[in-house]
Length: 540
Ligand code: J2J
Image (tube, rainbow, N blue to C red; front, side, top):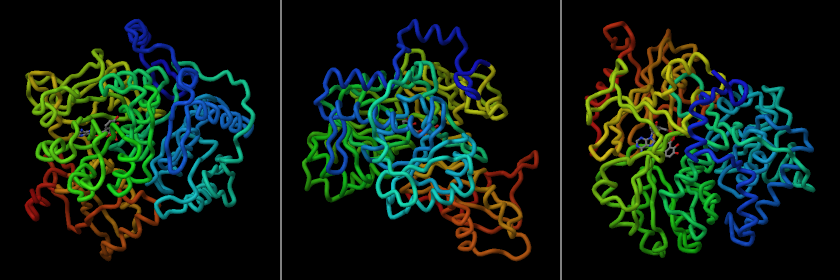
């Protein structure tokens, strides 16, 4: 298999040629994209963040100056840089600076802690780690010190804000230098997989493929330079980054408004003040927005589209969006590996409410297959496989896993159970992968099980989804103790001490003597889930 970067499988030449000839891959890079927008509409506002407003010209210049600063530090094209920044203008400045340099951001989430960050730094052999000083009551500088002590290869810790013992981001901006920059077919960055295995997988996305997904998303969401996108979800997640998200909005020449958090208290005044036209939420947040008494106190009339995705939105909640918030719902069923489906803005209401839409590209190939990999009959439910001009052909340095997660002819096995309607819309019916979708936050069962197994009093562990009226799912760990049984609180504290992101800590822990088995002697998670539902049926 050919590679776009060492360890990154890429499309076979015949596919690449076809995607170029079809006009999907146009040979553009992120660096050029911003340069071009700055030349066309330099004075237009690109980013609003806190009290700060940046024009396209300023963003372009800051990206150049920061790229020069990174370069002066010795960061080179192809180097990996773990970026863990909240929703602030610096996030996009850092992205574009690294894009211009050809260094590769690894997009961590603000919720990640030592276990995840240490792994990203080590696995990617990152040369730098970029953090805020404090965010959401957490001091990232202390986390960085811990990482530095365990990952000797990490050369720089760079802080947006008060740097403490580290390097200040603000001190790096310097005179722009000439940089040769990356090629359009080069990997631009690594996204993170929601995952279903022991360690998170890294997703290599190229300039060509990602920019195509932006262009397609911009067209479907009808964005232009008058559009104002509110970034309420964590900016580094693929949904608010690209569907169409902050990068799609900049592609369209619109304005990105950064929200410090997704609460109505923060977002409603921003929508009113900045005349926001579109934003994206996960289902639990959409529910909070719809139930908020604040909605009536603020002028939300500019909001045309509320996108909801990341997890399944119930039909009942979907139906309430237009009457309560006065805007069009757009369901988005996407994945950081590539494929993104959207309901279209002019679809009939019923189609918007009951389906998760259809792919961006006419060349997104979709198969729905049974457990033997055979296509199911039309309309039947099966696993979604996909291949296309912006869906990866393999994870970074994960040969054994890639052999399972991709078919021999390059389809990505999403692990999602779907059916197709006669109109060609996708409806998500469930999941075949061993993952918990906690209101959009993905938890790989095996990853948490491995951490639990490290406890001396845990003989075995199995983590499953517990239906939940608010989050859709929560996680429950079934634990077979060894010798003395630990308390649930002690296990939770143990997981925290191992530096696991809070959303991965089991919501509930049940101690059992044995696990139910499948016919072939594997742990039957289906039976464990069923036992939970029998014990406490989900509220509806
Ligand atoms: C049910 N499950 C969904 C939906 C994602 C746009 C939107 C979301 C993501 C994302 C993204 C779902 N209904 N509407 O990257 O660009 C579940 C599926 C899917 C997994 C991917 C984007 N929307 N899902 O959520 O990489 O299980 O991307 O395979 O985090 O989320 O998760 P992630």
